[in-house]
Length: 135
Image (cartoon, rainbow, N blue to C red; front, top):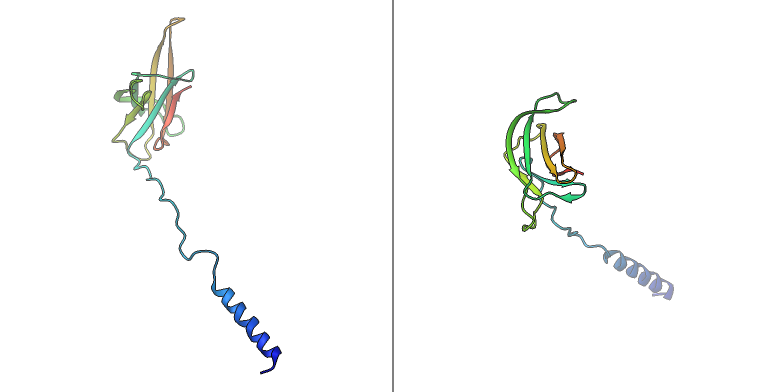
C-alpha cells in the first residue's frame, strides 16, 4: 500500500476518533429548582424607617374597592410579627389565602417621639412571594 494512502487513512481514522470524543456530557446536571409558592401563603416583613417592627399587629383585609383602585374592606384577621428573639423577627405569616385575590395589609405604629401614629398599607394580588410593608 502506498505511503500516501496509509497517511490518508491514518488521518481519516484520527479525525473519526476525534469526532467520537465529545467534550460536553450527554446529560447535564443542574440544581433542583426551589419549590414554587403554593399561592395560598405569604410572608410580610414589617418595617418603619428601615427598622424591623417586632410584635407589631398586622391586619389583613378584603379588598373593599375595585381591581384598579383597591382599598381596605372587611377585616379578615390580625397577626403579630414575630419577636426579635426569633430568626423570623419582624415578619408576619398569613395562610389560607386565595390565589389571584387582592388583599390589603395594614399596620398602625405608635411613634414614641414625637408622639404620633404611622400608618402603612399595601393592597395587591401579587403577594405570593412576600413583600415589605412600610419603609
